Length: 258
Ligand SMILES: Cc1cc2nc3c(=O)[nH]c(=O)nc-3n(C[C@H](O)[C@H](O)[C@H](O)COP(=O)(O)OP(=O)(O)OC[C@H]3O[C@@H](n4cnc5c(N)ncnc54)[C@H](O)[C@@H]3O)c2cc1C
Ligand code: FES
Image (cartoon, rainbow, N blue to C red; front, side):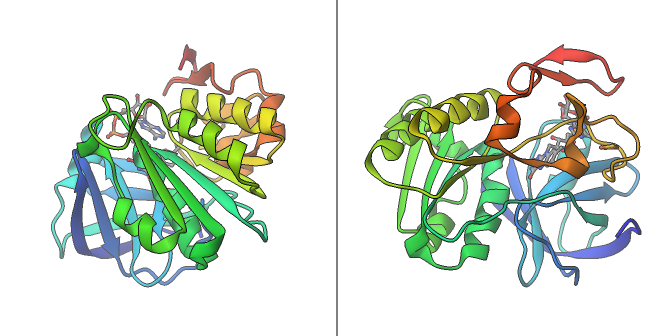
């Protein structure tokens, strides 16, 4: 699992503004919510949730810095290194689930929808700042019963946050679980909404990762290692966390505000 494989990129798909999916042949089994350490030769290695876990595997990259820009500029036939899969993914219950994603947070949620494989058991809420940043809307439509979108500026779907959409849905339907991924302040508000509605939740978190295997401690959060104990955590664990929604560690291990 810890050995890196070099794989060739088989396809590159532009999903939305600054968002790109890379597909590649890699024969390992990946559970929904697990992540890969992706190495761009000559640039560096970054953690990425798997957005496709069947057939050609895939990651969906939001360009924020050097490594993600280098990933997004790759072409079919280019090589990348892959380690993993790592971490604890989503525990998919038997029953209806609500998937709530913000921005690139849709990546592991679509892998969860593919795993469930029964559109009648899935509703999807997708949020972004503006319509050009919405991703996987069509993919979500074919994998779920209902899809709703929200944008901060009202350019597509409901104006407002995806958590506001989630509050409406939690009031009118019964879900066995809510699966969330996106900016941590959004996840913190989503957790509050799930607790108020008495619906179990699971949130996929991000922390600064180096080893990805539970050894270096750079992803520590309240005594938990996000790479090994997560990245998906049950809502009741996050309710006890002092850091969740407030603090993370930078690349030097210092606490910084989210
Ligand atoms: C479990 C997990 C899953 C992720 N899944 C996705 C995904 O599906 N799609 C996606 O676009 N992004 C994902 N990320 C975030 C992605 O890893 C960072 O955006 C990326 O590492 C930034 O690297 P950079 O060189 O482009 O930017 P930099 O300029 O180096 O950093 C920009 C910001 O990205 C974060 N970051 C940088 N390096 C790391 C690192 N090694 N580990 C964690 N965060 C880092 C920091 O907050 C930093 O401020 C995930 C992160 C984690 C921990
Ligand atoms: S990244 Fe090293 S312990 Fe989590």
